[in-house]
Image (cartoon, rainbow, N blue to C red; front, side):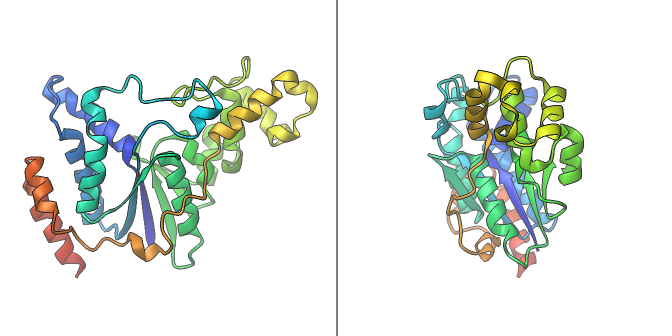
Length: 276
C-alpha cells in the first residue's frame, strides 16, 4: 500500500491565496477549507486509500523558545487564520486522519508519520505532499519520497541530492548553514547554497567540521541545525490501518452545509461506496 501524508497548513495557504486571484480579495469564510477538502477528496477519488493530514493548530512551537526570531503567527491574515481550526474539524468529519500540532509543528508530524509508516513492511511507499525543503530530510531512497504538488515533482533521495547537493540525512546541516527565511533563521553569514553543499560534501555533519571552518559561529550553526531537524517522536498513531479512509462521518453533511458546499457530500458518498 501507499501512504499519503499531506501538509494541511501549506494546502490551506495555497488555496487561500489561490482563491484570491478569482475573488478579487473578497475572502470566503471557508473558501480555503473547501479547497483543501477538494484536494484531499480528489486524491481519494484517484485511488488513495491511506492518508493523514498534519496541521499547525497554533503557529508557535518549542522552536520559538530556542530562537527568538523563529516564525510566529504574527502577520498571518485574520481571514486565513480563522480557517485553521475549521479545517481540522472538517477533515475529521470527512473521516480523514488529522493531526493538529501544538508544541510540535505540522512538519514534525509529517516526519513522525513517515517514520512510523515506513517501519511497516506492508507499506510500499510513503509520499509526503509538501514543497517544504525541511521535509527533504525524511526522504529515504525510493521508499519515502517528497511530492511537490506545484511542480508535480517527485523527489527521491537522488533527486534531493541533485537539488540541494547533499544527501537527505544532511538537509538539517545544509539548512543550518544557508538559513530558512520562511522559518525565521538566517543561517551563517557568507555561506550560500553552493558553499554549504561543498563544505558538507567534504566534511559531513557540522559536528565534524574542522574548528577553523566556522570558528566561534559553530554554536550558532548547531542551534540552527536543531531548529531545522524535524522531530520523529510524535505518537500520532500505532498502526497504519488507522490511516485507511472509510468514508465521511455522520456530521459531515452539516459541515458542508455550513460551508455552503453540498457537492462535497455527494462526492464523498460516491467515493465511499467505491471503497466498499
